[in-house]
Image (cartoon, rainbow, N blue to C red):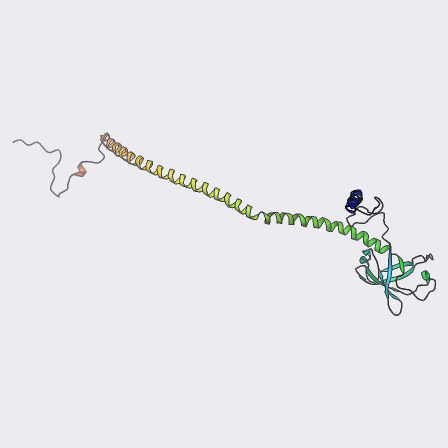
Length: 260
């Protein structure tokens, strides 16, 4: 019983300590910087960067360099780069030419280490080199400007794709809407058609009745016109010319009087 009570009291007093989560105390400033959206930072000199020797050939004139900052991907074969040995600042740079470039690595050909390595014959692996290349800084600047153009182009494509996706997602609703709209217009046309046909049939019936009445009135008018027609008084033809000529002798006219 005593052991149980002591354990219970221990848990009560240790509960606040157990509730505290152990997290590292990170500094609030000076560690994380705002994202520059992978554009150039004008406060940084991109012509200077660091690399470490990871491999070399048997002759000791070709070295493979590892870089944490992969801006070296903008190098091209044949580019000239200058470097110094870290912590061995003699004030002079050694000269190297780029041979190949890959992700986070590039290889260089170095003829002479005397300017920056003080005549030492062996270059160990893992040695850190401080590189300088004005051409790399120019290409980083050009790449940043070209990336702005690509981002604008991407935004245009995304806008078009968004419109296409919205159309495809709402295709069924739009199809139903269009079909309903045309069905409504078809029904309206059918109603207008039926109404026009009914009006035409009604007009035909009215015209048939009117035709019969007009014919009857015209007939009555023709009869009245014939009845009330005024005949002409003058003769239009010589009535003597209308006598029949039977080749019989005809006396003088007027004939002489005869007494009986």
